[in-house]
Length: 295
Image 1 (cartoon, one colour):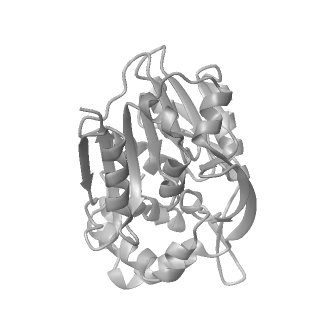
Image 2 (cartoon, helix red, strand yellow):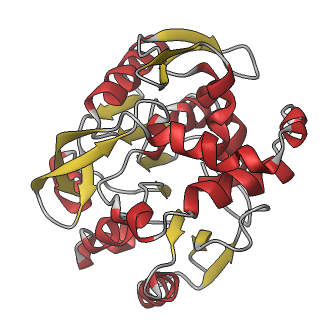
Image 3 (spheres, one colour):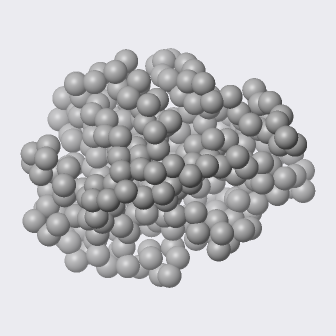
C-alpha cells in the first residue's frame, strides 16, 4: 500500500469518529468488513481495509506475479489483506505474514485463523537487520502508517499535508468524491490523522533467522512495506539466503539516496530486472515502489 493511499484513509476522518479533547479518535475495537469480492475479514478501520485491498493489484505488476505453489513473505503485513489475496491464487500458496504492532498483529492473527491458518502463518514481530527490540510509533487513527522510524515525518513535516493534497487530486476508484474537498483542509486532516500516537515496544528478527527457523527452501515473492525500514530488512538477509528469493516488491523511502542503494544491492544479488515508479499523486515526494526480478 503506497503512502498516498495510506494517507487517503483519511476517509475515516469523516466516518465513525468521536471527538475527544479537541480532536478526533477512531473506535479501536476489532470489527468485520468485506473486501471487494465479498470476503469477510477483521479490521480496525473499515475504510483502511478497503484501501489495503485496493492496493493489492498495485504490487502485482511489472512482472511480479503469484502462482499456485508459491511461498509469499509479507513484511509489514498489517491486517493481512495482501496475504489473504495471495492465498486466492491457488490452494497451494502459502503466506508468511510479519506485523510487529500488537493491536494490528491481533487482527492479523484473527484473519489468519478465519481464512486458513495452515497456509497463512502469522509472526507477531517485525523484520530488521538484527534480532532485537525497538520502539514503534503507533498511529491509532491510521494504523497503516505506524513506524519504527518516525523521523521521516519529523524531518519532513509537510509530507502528510502534501500527500493528502495529492490524493485529493488523484483519488482511487470509488472515492472520487474526495476531489470535492477544498485543498485548504489537507493540513487539518493530516494533523488529525497523526494525533493520539503512542509508543509501543516490538520484537524484531532478521529474515535469515526466520528462514532458518522455519526451514524455508524458497521465497517466490518478498513484499516489503514497512514505513522506512526497508533497508534494514534487506540487510538482515545473509548471503546464503539471497538465492532463495525469486522476486521482490518494495516501498522505498528515497532518503539519502536509498533508492539507488537498494537498486545496487538487488543488482549485486542477481536481480537484473528492476523497475521503480512513483505513484500518481506522489510525483513530488520521495516515495517509490521498486519491482525486482531475476532475469
